[in-house]
Image (cartoon, rainbow, N blue to C red; front, top):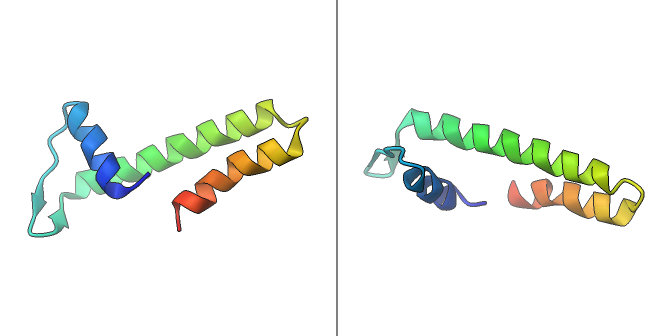
Length: 69
């Protein structure tokens, strides 16, 4: 998920996102980190559910690596 997508979703959720000349309010940075942590937890939960299929579990876990490049 891109940072812009996170800002869009935060806005859709009713949060106010302040951006001034490329500088982003510190709260949205914390929110983005929080969203990353939640996504990582969910990926790991999904990977554990398909642990009998190592290729699938590895592909799910790799999503986090790809998104953070």
